[in-house]
Image (cartoon, rainbow over all chains, first blue to last red; front, top):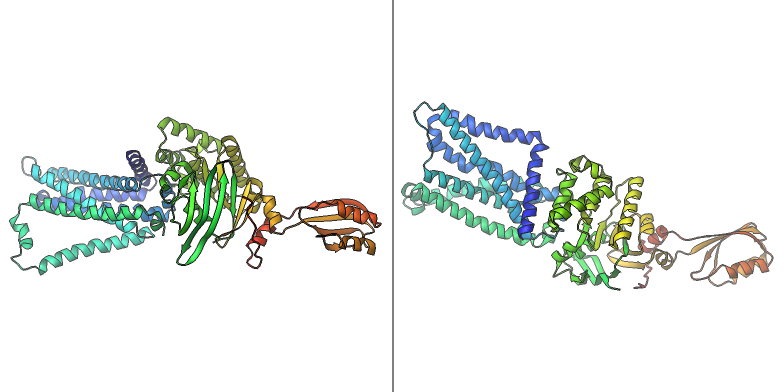
Length: 242
Length: 319
């Protein structure tokens, strides 16, 4: 299993690097994301960037990075006619899934941390006040943790959808709709609750760290369910090849 | 001799339509087996069943002594495969594609590199190993995909249409390389192909699939004769228009006269017969023979006879 996992991780890593080497447009898009989130937004939000907005983008940025990659994970292999050959190798389905998930999460999460880090540098460079503005240790820990949980969740959801779609575009469209739908359904569901319901009170009553922990935990739990469902499909190659 | 592949009544249907039905097959080590059949006959489905990529609807199959239902991963570890599509990662280089396959088959670094070098050199791809596969011609990609299938020295290799889409020179070169590899390693090859000339040149055993059923199984010459494709005999000489000569030929059992003139006779020879009775009959009745040409019916005509629905030529398997 470990050797299989390492083989998959190696392949996914090489493909990721090759994507950027062989595709200047993709490279430019990534540089655009860096410029937008790490330079432009801190310039726009100025003083409010570090205490408020940076935290929001810290959690939201992984969706912009994770969804396209996750949508491509199996649907892309199917579209490029490599899925059947991959399944015909003696790799364990668990290793295939874990290898893809690890590389996608690593890429989206690390990229997010780098962009957020750069945005903090920009914010400090334009800041007129003395001293360095920074997150507290607890905020740093839970921001990075929640961002990781969001990345894992989005990739798990993406792979779940991608394993069932015949093409990348279909997978991307369905994923986009699902994420928007989930967000709207959550907001709508919360608004239907009575004003004194514990769930609606939570953001005001609970400390941010506890909220991040609870939210991250729920997302990781759902991710586990999605990954198990994808694994069950991978164990039946005839379903994957439909 | 031990069978590397054995199926008994192997079947697979999709929504009530049988793609493979009652397949009985036994291949011994070192065999080059060609599975022929028109589009949709069940060739690719058969390979998928044997690799455990599809679940059989019925019957039983063992590959290298392993049950396809219970030990699909072990089977995949010991076999090499080129499927309908080359399945190469086109953004990666040839060296990376082989390195990934080597890792997936559990080869150590040194062996992986040595095998990649040997195979890429054998197929004439070594110099271009660092180029992305996307920039390569179809023939080069097909060679690389076959090299990938051979990276771990498998005992059995499945090749689904290995020369499809290649120009004649590339196909000949690929066939030659494959034959040399097989000869030096005693690998068993399981090939599906539309190219009958290729099957005739390469394969030691041929199976013809028709609508999922094995319509014939045997050596190429057995397929030809079993399909009713007889040897054609042409004689040149004189006196062939004599009524005595014609009457003598008519009395020969199994011989069929196709066309006749005073100087030329064309006949279908019955299976397992010799030319001696024909020559004796003609000469003893006043005919004079200058030359005799015997031409075997082609595998192509045998194939067409076997797969044409009107002609139900069920051939008893000789294995």
